[in-house]
Length: 345
Image (cartoon, rainbow, N blue to C red; front, side, top):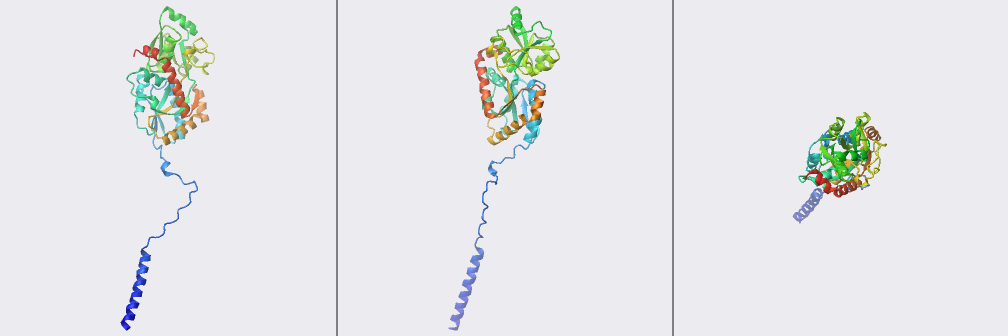
């Protein structure tokens, strides 16, 4: 009996110890998660872009009207993007080399293109070696417009009007300078020849600025190019602008009639310059760039600087910019046969 009592006592002690050990090994209760009040950021949607300099490729020589727009927006995009913005001039092929370079870049938001329309569409359609499709690129934001092409002659030329130029070309073909075969200047030349019916030959130069110097030096009879390119030389009375190709008179030359006013409405077109990215740019990066560009273009200081540089500011968001590009392509398609014939392709 005595042993039996001790066995029971020992059994009870062992049971109590086993229960205590089991309780000590059990997992602690999970802490209660804080309620989601909407302030917690969605980490999956966050990106650290941009964290290095952004490069904008200008497929033309430095100093021309295209380059002027890129360099005007540069400090303001730097301000709102939060990183340095670098302008890279990549010349050649009427813009083809620079466009092709950006088209093939990694779509990470660090390599962008200054889109110039209708020019880049023109190059793509008339040049059989073009290895890109700008319709696949990502339009981000348009910067400028109303930068019409114009026709200029040496200031002391007997040609004072578009009608004078047409009449003078009947006696002999006039030499007309412009930038490369895939540029807006070339489109203006083809319209001058095909729609306005002037007897003219095209003399292409590497840049718009060189084409302007050709008419200043009277190496050619006339020149076609951006009103921005002609403005300084016109102010110095070295060239005379006799007509513009825009749908309305250019603010830069309010006294100069349009080709439509001269009776040639089919020769009208506008030029837009904006920023594009390679195909496949992620939507979150595209949205950040569009926002930064919108703030930059609408910055009052940029607006003032643009006015000083004779840049026509024409803000368009990504959707509007895309539609504008499609409209520009319609102009190219409507004149494609003449453009191909004039290019010798």
